[in-house]
Image (cartoon, rainbow, N blue to C red; front, side, top):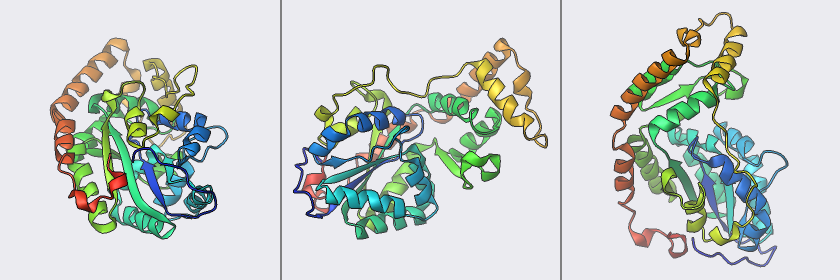
Length: 313
């Protein structure tokens, strides 16, 4: 989508919607801050990013879409068109749930087309599954009571796991799913949105960035050189210590006496290290070569004639 040129404001020409859907723990927070810091420069290059006060992610929009409500994104697309942008960039790792809700995803694509988007592109990053597992586990300790063994069982058996609404208010009354078996989950999603909605799916390797996570996506959008304002300290969800994770989970379980306190909360450092090593070995065995198979499948692109010229990376 190289080098868009801004149109005359008020032309209400159709735009390209780039939906950055994470995945979780792949540098999405940094991408969102970089887009917010450089929103003016991006707009000058034809890409509109709605920058909000405080946290710049579009999580509210993602929650709306998951509930079949598109009004909040409607105003974002309308504003992009009024400003004469060629593209609208919407980012929330919570869009990951669309991988598992085809009806919602296709309704979303249909709505975007009717709202004035000539093309929809879903962009996502994948990371080593073992790294992702432990990073997500620590992150969940901030929000919901969840045992790593419970996560592991689902991830190994189903290739994903889900956080149910009853886990806590931050589940936003919906089930949220997290992909691990990317080679099995992403290609059918790609095929479905392409055949039903003409949408494109782009997948990037989290480990292959040159300057910062997300730079490949900005490069494909033709605006990498517009990202010049960097945070003094890279904005990421920092890792949590074993003590912090255990304290977080104890707090959650204390609020829900009906839930049985997991045994892992009583482990000392050596016991926790042994537990993690054993579980990590199972994850590595289950997902060996998985991302490589995904990228091989993604190399089988739709026929070039079906992809508009200016949308080809």
